[in-house]
Length: 261
Image (tube, rainbow, N blue to C red):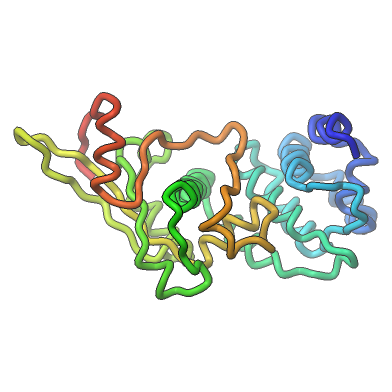
């Protein structure tokens, strides 16, 4: 499939594109598929399509995963939801369509709000970029190596559009997507304070991040390869692997107003 054809399939997921992505599973859930909310459904399909390197590879979506993704994800138009559900749908494709390993990720995604998914995406996108940029080699499959790592943010940036930060971080922790977290204030000169949040990641958090990029087979290279950004999902300007690094990054712009966490 040429790049132009792929772009067309992403923009207008027609019947031919659906069959290429889903295979025979589409026929099996035909009536249910028609009943779904069309806008949300098509956003998921478009997100899945753009993550698949070769829609002509002959692979089939897993029926169980496909059914749960479309039923749970179609009733929202949020971009980050479409990216997460679409990514897991793409990740469920295999030569025989029997692999349902991605079902665990569907269960987690549908248990989180859109802003909690965006928070997960923000954490692991920033961590992925920081590891690659600073050439940090971390065995993300080994808990004793990955959980001591931290990524730091300005609380103000995370709160912008994400609501109750500590509450949402607590829910991510409960789901096993982060190991622990802290929201606090750092004393600056002349009595000023800088509100920050830091997060310790988990292997499961990395796995989910890789799955929604349809790169589950490459999850162990999370510290070496930039998995890229989702379109139309906002990211913070400032993040770092240490507090000092965050303060240096944030000093490049006007300090944000302070609030009590």
